[in-house]
Length: 169
Image (cartoon, rainbow, N blue to C red; front, side, top):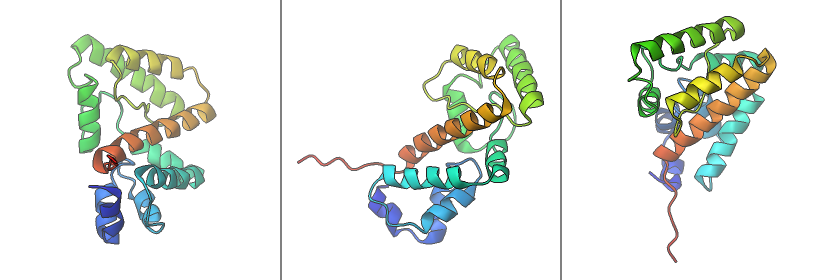
């Protein structure tokens, strides 16, 4: 699907196709849909990121809390399953799983939301190092970082769905 095809979708189709890129937060796609047509994937993503940035604190926290804990053996979206699987989080040893579970619990106790990291292209060692480092942050910095990571995740997902056409001339 290219950007022209995205622009031609009905509102319901647009929301169905793009509603999941912000992890079960279809409100982002619902608001973005009203700004069509978009000239590129980047312009669509920029509008979606702007919508997230303009959200109130309650909406941002809900967006963060919609994400599953990394490595969790729980129900999650297809996007999250694939991303975590590719990062090796579905094939952790028992020791690694227990360590990640403890880190996630410590993080959740401190911040009251799950640790969010765009895991695409990262190793499990990088993921462990990141959570250990970010547990040291304060809540304000971590909310900001979580939103930044969510936007990275959404951008990857959007690029997987909407392909840019290459002008070969």
